[in-house]
Length: 561
Image 1 (cartoon, rainbow, N blue to C red):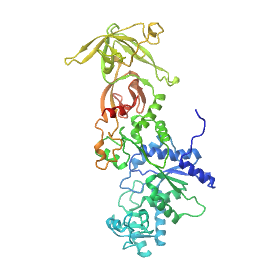
Image 2 (cartoon, rainbow, N blue to C red):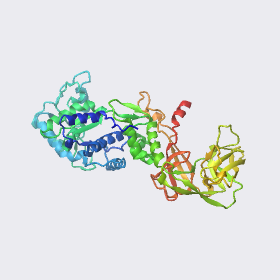
Image 3 (spheres, helix red, strand yellow):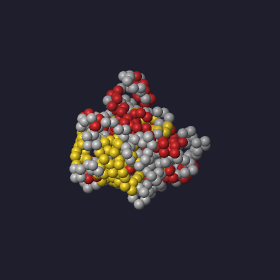
Image 4 (cartoon, one colour):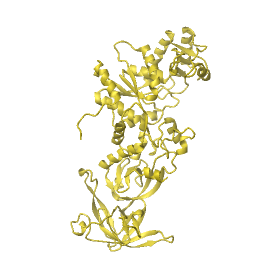
């Protein structure tokens, strides 16, 4: 394994170049600025890991700032969820900030713009403004209110603030350049009227600043050195810099906006609007439904912070967008859970086995290793009795030589237990096998040290003792969409690709060691996959979610289709 340092991404190269040109390392400061209008999703994870990772690399502070300028869509519940998710991913912010902390300062700066004849109140309708702004190939024209006097603009803006106008009646626009080739520079709106209570400021304000006006100025107030955002904000950089030009003072850090590409995940949508649609139309049960690509949903499904951080590190930071196969994310959770998840036995599609020569009423406790990948994980005791369950798929009356599980006349080993041999089976009226009668080799118990215990048989099966089994609700989750890019089709809606088989609920039978399991406990059901205890569990009933199978079967399924 190479000990060479990891190559820098292009954002780190930018920072290194700035430091080489004389920028002080002590002035480095970063921020993660989500809008509290929904839950964070896997797409946010890259931004979180980037900003907080830079903070760790350069020993620089990272603020968590909520871009809370739209009270119509934002809620305290979303603020709480975002904080919980960032903490869970393993990061600590330097200070908790809100754009609403700066409402007065932003308003005061807007007044200064009006006094400098760099902003004006426009009374056109949104449709009229859209026409007046022109198109990417046609210049805009001055609106009828662009040359209002400074005095009239100050008066109207004050009245907007005082709540004397209805929503949409007036807006405040920056006066920049209606002929700019960048549409965003054609007198962008910086304030609008909104008669909505804010989750922090209540009804103190009825005008709210727009994102472009708020974002860069908030970066400046916080003295953020590098403002990192996704590629769709590249056209906004010119406006970001223009707004900073109006307020920046000498001897203060001027924020620098730089953009990186989104990493889109296959079989997923990450638009908050579309995720909200899934919730509102009951396609999923909640924002933290384990099928959702939200960080809370992934957590509930059984993903670990480490697996998500490793995934973000693997896909890296780039300048071009591309589609990442969800199987890569699944690979990282498998890799981490393989190291940390205790092994237990569970049967999800039971077939009854009766060991006819095992004494009735007898039970014994067999020693089982908790995790072969972790010597410190220790062992546990698993009960064994005359009647057990195995998986239906693990038995056939007849089978070819490649079938190494239980069939009539053949032996298999029970994991941590005895070698058994199928002697006969019982069927129901429809011809389905409902019970298999077996015999066992009393001297073949695993770990007993006898010659028979060392005897090799080709098949090893997991099982549970029927007498001791815990009954559990098992939720088998699959990918939420059947198409790898469900929201990129021009002729179809993304909802057309919802996977009707994304959740299947069954009853499972578990070894009794799981009786003390708690929500978010992660486990491996041997030979079946990785699972996680759901928060819906009660003292009377366990609810367990499938995180991911032991192997990726999706590609094979797609090939068959």
